[in-house]
Length: 592
Image (cartoon, rainbow, N blue to C red):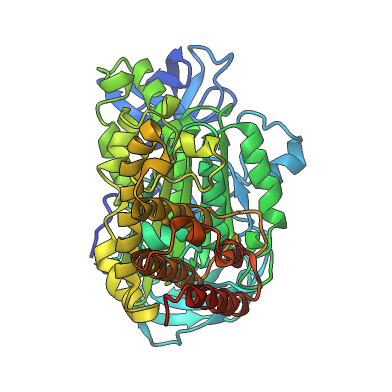
């Protein structure tokens, strides 16, 4: 079992406060206090929230999560003697937070559209009462991670109240009824009291009993991902791409359609207009599985590019802690981080103000280790209660100028096992999702192939390999085509180019805004690609029987095949295409 590094304790407040010695943007130096690393401190007369990131002799270096404009040396600094924690309990789902888990709706109601400095609000409402139903009885022995009761958090999501890690004992008293998150619902024989809310240091991974193999795919409904570059439940994926290549749209599609039960979406340093679109669209989206609003199983963390940079780092850790909490209940959680490049830029800015030795392109030398700490908190696990849960992490990367050789992209690729490379040239050709099938890869293909073979088709892996071989051959032929034109190629190579075009346009291209094509079940994906392969096999036989390539290219079944993915009655349309294809090849005496 993974042990936590720091106990969750709150030490008594000191009577005397320190004072500000130096201010450098979000980095404040204080004297007169003696905190631990990563303690939360209150800075200045307005009690701005900050976190200790360095201790040098008698000086304490603090990163402040709010704007430090007009803060001056001599103002007081007070150590809270506690770590930066996330509040975990009923009420998380459907809430929009900033990077340090302040609910934006609550703040907006009290101060309007602009958040004032030094203000705070609890991450979970202290007034709302929840109906608690115990799942353990008096006399039962429980330990950390045991589910002691249930709360109906949203229409379709049951919140499982957990015994906090490192607590154990026999149940001396447990109540049923309506309580606030701070009310005691369970008392142990050793006097420990358990409420529906627990706090957890965001930088400390939550413990689990065992890590499991990533042998189950996270089904996304996106053909290029599921067929060619799948990600496992509990896996990690990176989506690097230049401006306008569709990173955010892909993450929206994954949030809506992937078969996870809980979604945590982190807008880390994104442009305000993009984040506004997320905040306005998500509450209106319908969950395709339940028909309820998608927000009922989503937690949004909004930290736009004009917010203080230090809070970007906190937003990532806050999001992964919330994801781990729902994982511990036995849920499959998908976490979308958009984008980790902005997080890295915040680290670079703070590092430069600390006057640390810069690494490549000015990023701190510890960039890769911080990225590793984040992505390694993903995984499919056996929880402390014996259930199975997972956290799958998909991180968008925004390399300047689309340069994949820059440090954040390279550091991410060394950690994640799936690489969905977005291509600016595909975007210019209006090919979406603009994932380059020649440079992308998934290291989960081997471990997931047995699942696809058992649950979809025995020929799944064979079909994928055939398709990739055709696309690779097309790339090789394109160099010749650019010199002499496609008409100069032998007819069998012209057929290869046509089949590759069908794979690209009929299969890989997918319209996120089409009511049918936005999501493709695995059986439809297989049937669509298998139909293209059937055409290819019959066409090759036809060429050997001296049927011309032009006759094959003019077949009506090709047009029908291209429209098949947009039809609601897919099975009926598929039969129509197959019948038409067989008829046309029969006329050419291929199937006689």
